[in-house]
Length: 271
Image (cartoon, rainbow, N blue to C red; front, side):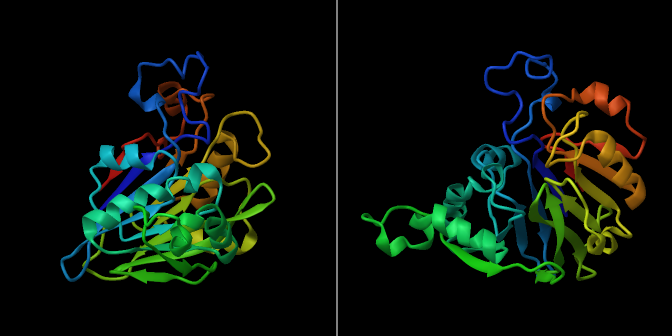
């Protein structure tokens, strides 16, 4: 069973267009950050290979090639901002390779926005030409209502991204045949605050994945200092920070973090 950080960067990506700051021109490959998303791969109790994505941003094609992904059973969407969902068109290649549709899990409000933007996918019959589009099956997500998926349990929970309510996900084994030392894992990208009702979902974690944009305050994201405070309270065995801007050089920032906290980087895999 494997968890891969497909991307760990903020909405502009790193390097940022037109920027020659030390991080954007850094030779350290860990300072190159595609838009934040992740993949979970495992073998289900029946012996079948499974893969889910946590968000599908505009870099999905490049990320899937780098991670050698050959299937996708489902995508779980945190929210409908461009850097998290504008890779939905790329899902059509998984349809072609697998010969079957895949499930798209999102809150009703988010699904409505996705239907509006991706009309050519969700209202395929209205296309002038019957072109090659993704075949997605919309599935409703609600906070606190787990989804059972081939031996894995995915529980959505509420987070705040500024004034916007978004979702985080807790991953737990739902079968003795589906296990990994990094489970349970909570995935919390694009966070500025954790509501009171969410803290119980962050208990007993082996792994916490948490937003840490930069050192300066931001209205819709955690600073790295705020993220450290939340990580100390959660007390997971290991915390990985994601959604970093070009303000945070990897090596220098990592060296100043507590021993059980690290910046994630593109391609980092937990097994």
